[in-house]
Length: 98
Image (cartoon, rainbow, N blue to C red; front, top):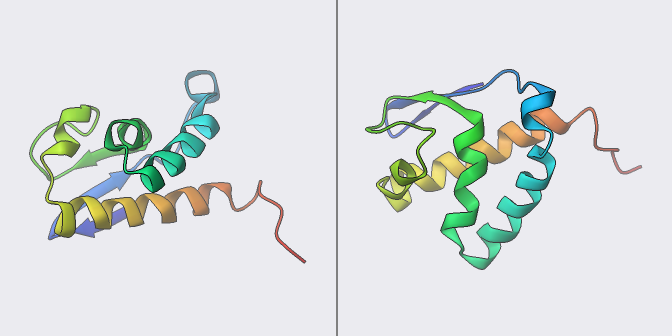
């Protein structure tokens, strides 16, 4: 998945290898809980795992890089894109309500 955020391209990983990412569902849960509690440090690990590349300064696998993004024009839209990514990736494994 690719998104443009504040004029910069962000690419999310198409594939997460099972053996290396078995704990990703736990990270998704922790990310959601951290976001609602305002705990930035616990919200970032999922982003580090799923953002493959971006045109922002810094390395997307480095948690410190996220702390340098602008709150309203960069990190907030990035979190919305992450939400879309998770929904897209889990659409086939999460039962739909009748």
